[in-house]
Length: 420
Image (tube, rainbow, N blue to C red; front, side):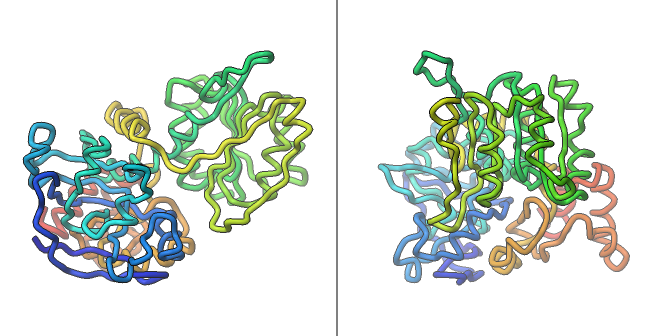
């Protein structure tokens, strides 16, 4: 079986190639990838090459297919798994397999599986670890968004609190408490807002900060204060670039008590320290953003650690249960994965887009491996549509859905560009 895929050979060395997959074994599954989403974690792996913890030292000789936020369809099932999976099933994959303690993961470590490919062979360990998850959503792109959502879901599950005199950790955010998301105006912050407003354990106050007013305004259109209020949450969007004393104003918004749960979405020491300063008693600080700098440090107030029982946690990705929760909430219409997608493109542009990912503003960059299309912002469809009827139709469809990507847009794209 021939496949076309983007493979990593070393630092900043990505190549789009066509090659033969090995014959599928009885304990493996052959699948067709239908969508993938570019992730900053992939950019970090590409930037670091074999120095990355999930990339093999011999990646130059055994190149790894990149992409780990993917959704697809099963083509053929090996005998070992014939009772659990069948041809035509849609699936998503939890990339953090943790198989026998290994850090190997699809999208980082394997020659035969990754999201930026047309066909892949799914190895036995993915099924052994229950990381091949059935997906029943309406669109493939929704499946690609389950992994980003699982990361924020895992973050909220990792938060914890205590009661004075007790050593029992009460897992999860403080229900009805004060929550602060610093630099929460990016795509992962957006997913976090969407989830926490619509899950079963919500804060009473949610403050989201950013430094670009246009981003905050767009967030306010998509995730409204009215919807938040209907779910029992007082939601505030706050621009830290336009105030003289952000710390004082954010503290005032909390009623002077500080925040029970603070999430920091950027690896900037001053933001970590601001979050620490704004913790209330028994407050939990979650450092969400993974830094590239292995020596990244920030100061913490250990007086408050001792006397106010403040604490810090960090999460890196979600687990299988988190992905299942994301998929279930999408199926029930509780969260809207289209909120995250700002760009759409084909396999032909993955290598270049991945290497320049930090420079491309916006949310998630959605890739369709069977499509030949430059990575394009949804916001640019109208302008491009003046010259190209394909983009003109995409623009009409997206505007029907509040300027967002949709199942309708996906079906039009796959039919027009790939005949699928």
